[in-house]
Length: 106
Figure 1 (cartoon, helix red, strand yellow):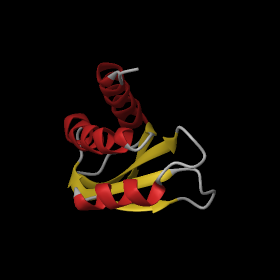
Figure 2: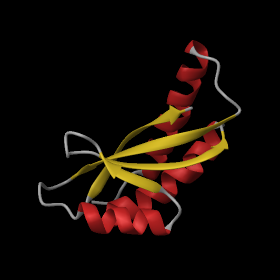
Figure 3: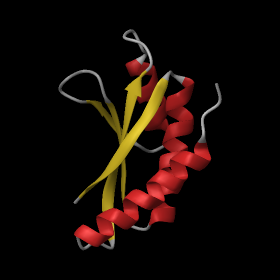
């Protein structure tokens, strides 16, 4: 099945708008993208290596089930976040990881 980038983009822009209604957004921040594996034996190390090569900082969270890819600080706008989210998603999908949102890290 192909990934629905249009739906993911729409969700990112909607999330950005909702966050902006609750909090003052910084002009620049680190953005952390979250990815969940399709399978238990997903190649975390290979995915991390590819993401790092693309300029992301990576780690597997404490539960060992979520791959995190950070970038920045970058200018904070829905378009800027989406640009980096799409890049990270394209890489993560090739290793069997699905996007599971993003968060700002100040």
